[in-house]
Length: 85
Image (spheres, rainbow, N blue to C red):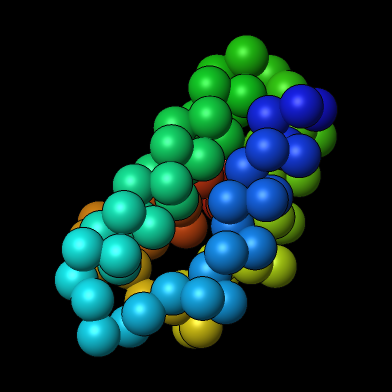
């Protein structure tokens, strides 16, 4: 649960993201990728509830319609993980 609180604080910073800065976009994407890895971990360990909570955080603060992925493969992988829940 502490992870969710900490990562929420980071994701909330997305409102200050400079879309003209590739460095900021790449950094933000790396946070999303970290979350995607954690979602995968939870699913591999049959904890769909924790995985769902992280997906909800991504949807709330970092949805790809609001902030497009730099690496589209990560979005595709997240979509795959959504289907696993």
